[in-house]
Image 1 (cartoon, rainbow, N blue to C red):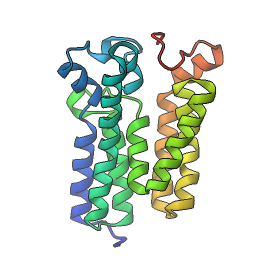
Image 2 (image 1 turned 180 degrees about the vertical axis):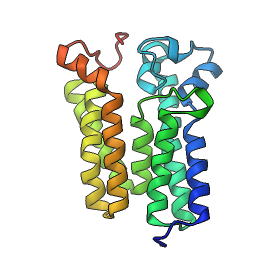
Image 3 (image 1 turned 60 degrees about the vertical axis):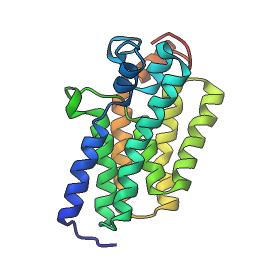
Image 4 (image 1 turned 30 degrees about the horizontal axis):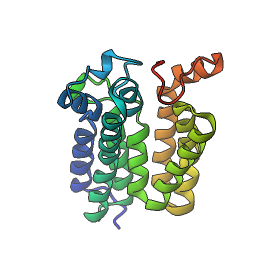
Length: 203
């Protein structure tokens, strides 16, 4: 692969941000006749919040949509054989699009599923390791946010093991730091012992 950034890299990065800006939670809820997730539960347009009031089907579709937003742009970038840095930035752009969607006043979700999709795009092994960590933690602690934080904290290690390049590792670290920042209220709730368990209606 080329190391130097080219015009195609920038085009794919911009397109990836636009794809990430398509809020799966808002779109799914609208199609299924459910309330706007920004006004229900925690107010977060993500799969966990949709699960609280929309049920498992709506949440599963939302989760799949958010993951595909991260996965598909990275796979396209790899297929187009752009630079390693370009591929990493395509993943970051999709992630930032989900967090700050241009189509929804730059108010998006927290990015867990989209980051997971990016990890699958980097390598299926990285995606499986990250998802497996989340599932393992969720089985033990039954708190989605804590499971996500542990899984994403380990994601840079998985990238280093299976997809060892500085560009991808750096981008993964950046996504992890941002994701922790976006979960700061959840972290405060966990410290207080008030964070809701998976599947409960408690925000």
